[in-house]
Image 1: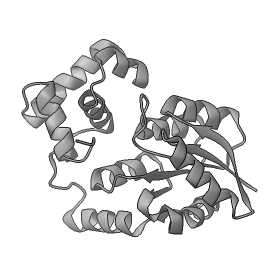
Image 2 (image 1 turned 60 degrees about the vertical axis):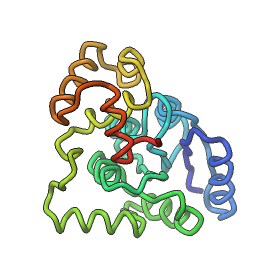
Image 3 (image 1 turned 180 degrees about the horizontal axis):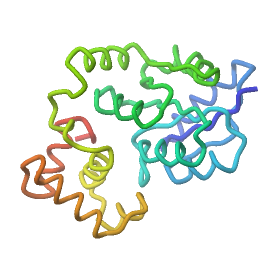
Length: 212
């Protein structure tokens, strides 16, 4: 049996995914997480062969989950399952160490195959993700989005600020100091030529990092 961890902050989504997985007969969901911190804890303490992780979770987001699990349990394959179809999320997820990336709209047809593929040591990308990566390669390593100037951590802090989190909340989520968060905020404003948090929020919405 392939033991699966599901991490998504919506209970109904997890229930639907669990049903898809467990009707196969050769997979079982051994752990469910509603946020990033819980996902990390369960992945390290429970028998898990594949972690299915959403990007947009409260507190510690999916990119941070990937980073921490890569550092603490690098042998665990991570499959990103998300509503986001933006190039930035695909590129950053794979470059951080995820072995697969599929969208929620493709989950009914692709989730089971994706889990099996990454469990066997392969990579799995949905058609949408594959096309985005192909376009990225065709343009060159860097794209033409202002987001390309930002590091993964800067994108994470930008998204957290846009969601209305305080510097202290962000610091706790990413295990960094409040002063470091403020430094990231200053860098974001400078790199993106913006003035304040309201500008950062509008930018994040425009580029698909958060819902309007």
